[in-house]
Image (cartoon, rainbow, N blue to C red):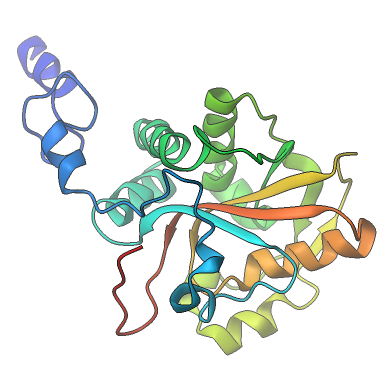
Length: 227
């Protein structure tokens, strides 16, 4: 039993082969990252921006598309609460999106879960990712900034349904007294959730600069791009 546990401690989270790191070099090399070493705002790519609602935030940073291994890692974090994945995802985000950035936010604002879903899960994956990114970047996370009312999960709905679901879905509790913030989420599909939150932020702080930080972007139907 002890030998088995030791082997598990030295196996890659993705391929389960021997590795002294959580994700082995082979799996890292097989991962398709966006090329963001030079601080590329993904909203500057028309092919991505046209599918993302972004009327109230001006920058989008992400590691890659919602495909292997990001989809597998995010599901393991979200539904199994396996924090080993959050630390690796945060590390990847920091390396690819923060390390060489020249204009960083002053505070990270994780997307809130509805209270009923949070109490049933006792876990918010956006909050956990934000906390891990804070640890690496030194940018503080402020979790109690907004509350979300109950409603259907966004991932089960299409774009039109999401827009209806998000009407009056959030309440801003208190915004930090800063000029630049980043909304943090695990996956972005249509951008509707982030834009709804950014709209509420600008109602209270019209001059606040808002970015969206997310681990993965869901490709538009039939689209697969190299960034």
